[in-house]
Length: 197
Image 1 (cartoon, rainbow, N blue to C red):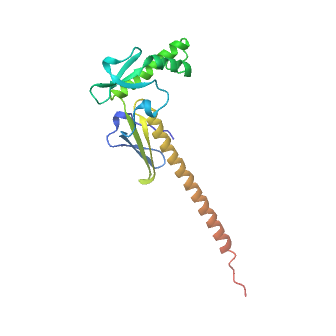
Image 2 (image 1 turned 60 degrees about the horizontal axis):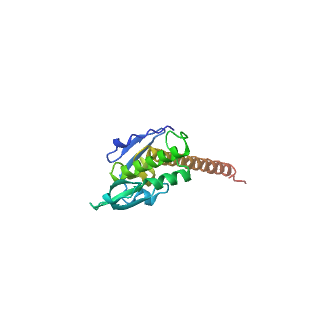
Image 3 (image 1 turned 90 degrees about the vertical axis):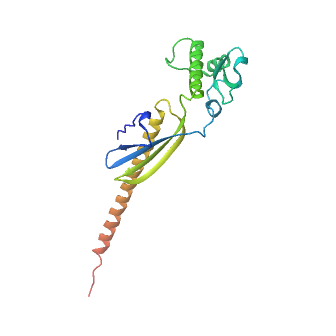
């Protein structure tokens, strides 16, 4: 079943998607403000600290404000490059350049991603999916803490819809098989219910 998930900007309270065989799905997106900073909650980021913008050390880059107007998030770019080289980070265009060039490019991509989060250019969301068959709800699922940039959230929504539809089809097939078996057994014994004189 091909499932087309509309782009992120199309959601205002949810988007209903019509599917084959009488199925439909309501996909809702909500901002997830329970997630912490990406560098705290996720692996694979360069070191981030807080401090005065004017007091940043060599090799540090300013990410953005912390909420306290005098304190800023600072990204240790020099250390991030070392980590990236040690751990083999890479980014587009993949496998291009020397190990040092790949590490530098990957650390810069990490910095830009974290800088964008600090400046509220992206945030975490929850994807809530409710699946219906002929208007009756058959399943509901959600996943939270997903970045709203990129298309991963659409893949998550598709997987939840597909899982719910596949489970419903399998359950209905089992129920139909059980009903056929019961009918067959009832008919089998009904024809043997013969009175003798």
